[in-house]
Length: 44
Image (cartoon, rainbow, N blue to C red):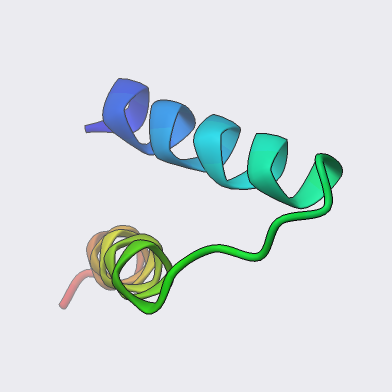
């Protein structure tokens, strides 16, 4: 899961660095993954 998250963040940051904003789908996917990680850390 962590490796997948790193890959998603890497793609997202490369887009931003090149001046492109991410698509709504990519942003939602990233948000969903980060919410899942936060829930696991919180113990939910």
